[in-house]
Length: 283
Ligand SMILES: [Mg+2]
Image 1 (cartoon, rainbow, N blue to C red):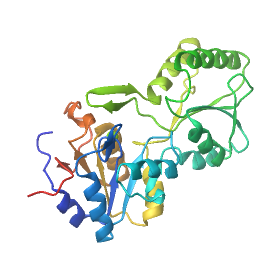
Image 2 (image 1 turned 180 degrees about the vertical axis):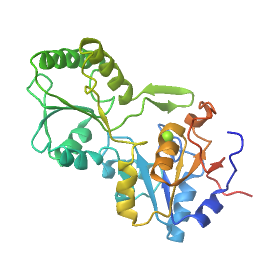
Image 3 (image 1 turned 30 degrees about the vertical axis):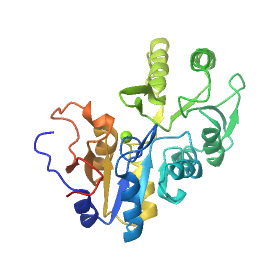
Image 4 (image 1 turned 30 degrees about the horizontal axis):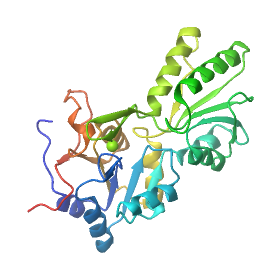
């Protein structure tokens, strides 16, 4: 990260109209709020400074996430939370999937996202047109992956189509200090590899990836904020920083999170505009 200028949180607040935060590794981790997060959101509320939380997490509806943040001392309005699960609505509309039968992997809120998008969640084993790889939790992993592999092969052998959707393309996430877990993006990669093995002339058998770094979540945030005077604060180069860069926004790499410290500084990696060492006030 040579040559990336440092910035303070006060300067970020002064320079930009709207602050966009990644959730995990910036404001919270699996154990609770990260240092400085509670005070920072209080300060933004006091200043009347708009902010949004952009998360690839599709396992919770915004009100569910807001309730959890409240238990951490973070008073976040659900309207300020933009999730990859919410992007299913536009995706289903764009691909004319209203009424489609959907196998949904994930907890109850993930199935609710699918219903809100117009899909009909069905049990694995029932006929379906859409597979939504929503989250890594809420189902027995090994048995479900084996069953999915089997029904997908059967379906494709019968020449039936299938639409594959991955709201959260993250491969890993921090489970606590120095502990990591596989995210839904890793499960999608396993299925894609298996499909390529059996159907090598079907490059179309890929998941549509909705969350960061893809632009849809930034476009949805722009729709809510009404201004491009926004800056993205995140801990992951490949999702937060690359996504902001591609959407034409400045970005701040927050280096307190677990993700950033493991990122190599390769020349072709996305470059943040600034680096922020702490959310806490300087001086
Ligand atoms: Mg993160």
